[in-house]
Image 1 (cartoon, helix red, strand yellow):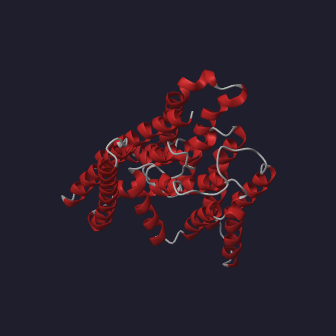
Image 2 (tube, rainbow, N blue to C red; image 1 turned 180 degrees about the horizontal axis):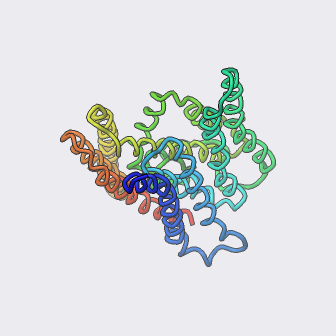
Image 3 (cartoon, rainbow, N blue to C red; image 1 turned 60 degrees about the horizontal axis):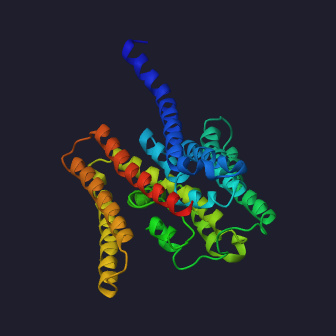
Length: 353
């Protein structure tokens, strides 16, 4: 093996390990930053909350590597779940349910990796059918585990209503605003929303139907009270987990996008523009109706979606000049989503804790 091939092989092996170590260090630093001011106020075993946030983040990081090539996209995907609105809001209810939602990504890892493992094994064609049955069973296993645990914890008091309210759907688009109104939080903050739509489209075109079915099923379980078992927040956490994976897939697509993908980048730019315009228009109407109404939260939402527009506009500009500039795209993704993640999670933690 020559020197160039040896270096290429070394980078291929060490790349995922490097990003895993970087992700673990980054998640630990973010956990200390978010919960550090409240550490001394938590009695008993409540200190386990930041540990569960890191555990959940690493789980989605490993889960997303099944479809995500770029290391920064996987890192951001994990952070969007472990430090996302859903898990932060559920962590205040106690360590039991927080542990459940923290291990959800790890429970889903066998389902997404077993297909690749079985494909590599030689055997007759009928083995493919049994592989499909095994994959389906592994996808359903987290659902049965959640149902069993929620049935046991059904009488546990939670700081949530047993049904979704009008502000709960707002959490997907403006989680900081929804947190101040006592909503059940979910979603992936503001800037990654366009990446979520792009990632969902990419998975649909790639016919990754199990992921999409599980995502839709989790949303259905959350919105249907008899199936939610009084804990819609847990099902929204499962939906938010797959939403974080889809946002990572979309971010990965934006990092590697070429000239044929310019239309999808334009669609993401249009989505952010519409959401920014809606938040600004809503703020204008509220100010006109009641000049004393505090609109800082709506202006914050507008600024975040505006930053998302700037990110996608820069990516589109790079694509239109037919340049790759992968390092620049990775840096833009880290800065744009990272700013939204840090500022929004800080706001939600300060509101809830």
